[in-house]
Amino acid sequence: MTSIHKACRQCKTIYEGSKCPKCGSEEFSDSSKGKIIILNSEQSEIAKNLKLKEKGTFAIKL
Image 1: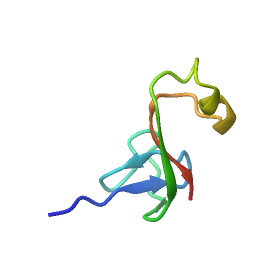
Image 2: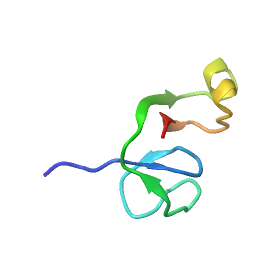
Image 3: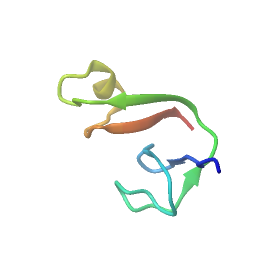
Image 4: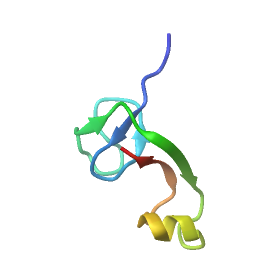
């Protein structure tokens, strides 16, 4: 059985399940381009450029 990953349209978090675990939104895209994993958002220039304030796995483009 394969898992289906979704990308939240509100905060771009990549997740499995019925709603986003970070913001609670049920609006998602099942197609996205690129994935980024943020380990420390305070030190990451990429996180700052993408305006990501928490660690996690995010879609770059929906």
